[in-house]
Amino acid sequence: MLRRWRTQVRKGGGQAFAESGRQERSELQRLQRENKRLQRDLEMLKKTIAYIESQRP
Picture 1 (cartoon, rainbow, N blue to C red):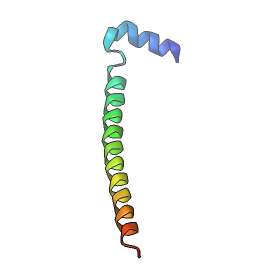
Picture 2: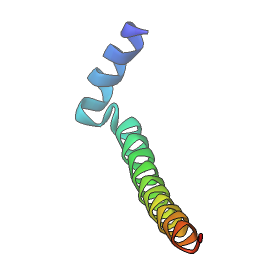
Picture 3: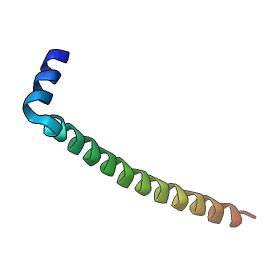
């Protein structure tokens, strides 16, 4: 495995692992979007629970 990486670095220079970096950035962006959506959902649920609790006698 290390031999393959070494060969990639020698052949490609700084571009040897560029694809891996792009994939990681893409995954990070996807996870950040999902995190924001989940935070919005959580806030909505909290507000809904608070409203329901306020309507109880």
